[in-house]
Length: 487
Image 1 (tube, one colour):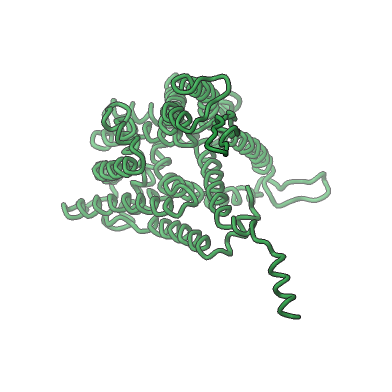
Image 2: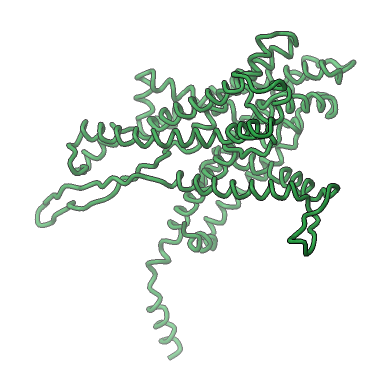
């Protein structure tokens, strides 16, 4: 990264304008997270929301992705889930239907059509999810007797569903506005800011635990005592060291790439010759980035949502309870509810499916963004070739073989990173008999690191474009002009 170039580019009015627009959109998004859904009084559903957050990891994940939208029952509660789901469906259909595949490969116009269809599909999905969330919260509130004497009218239902659907569409629009500024992917940046917005609460809880010295303070070599809890201090220290190591590995994994040398054939046109040069084709170890993790988590959230709807309508339904149990990520919060008698084979169902989905989506999404046949055709049209490989079909087969080998390592590495919370919990269950709840969030950490690097790279590219003329400016003539004026 060229940080000096980035700071220099901020002197450019256009660059500064783009940065302030992105920051303003993020601020607007955080303000939306505090606008409540018009669903009765604010305190009416507070207990129902707290029960939903505590009962399953589905609620916690929804609250994380929506930037606290569930905890505050805001209009962005649905978040970007409908858009992500619609994007998955459209991309799957483009692979299954030849006509859609032709449209997707039809340059900029095809990309616009696919994006428009994705937006159109996101609307009914947002309506369906809004209805489901209102239904779950209302039935949870009835079960906890917080709505005694309160009944939702048809107008309140319509108003709540409309506001939540509109909130999801506004988020999608804000994400596209950020992308248009050319300094990062808008959807990823909104999810990034959602996760980061939860960090102050985590730090506040950690600071409160560190400051609890009722059982004694930390003694430093017997010389003096620090007003911190010794146990929490050592656990936090180990956690921070592990966190630094994981971040280092994530950065190396995200930046790792395979370099393929591209040769250009020499061409003679009149008295001039062209070509006979070399360039590179970098292939990233994880070309799909964090998208497979987001897709896998979104897919696994759907069965848990169905289970929540069933149990809200029929609390004694065994099928709904099993869906919630099987498709709820094992954590310290849910361990006492579901596994009070100890580990069972059901504990491993969610991690196993999660790992398989991450690997599958890595291969799937890489095949979409890295079309080997299209790249091979473009190279052949440009008179380029890979040394030792014939142009055309042989080049496409070679690139496909290379990317599959990279995906084999990249997808399993991505899956293991996503498994960090479960692996950490499993270690503590085996040693202490219970999870301590300090597991490293592989999903959240992966999103933060990957999105931060991607947006920094985009910002760096834009900064290089803005400051390009600065490197070609000859300052000597300017000095000579000043001397001539003085003379």
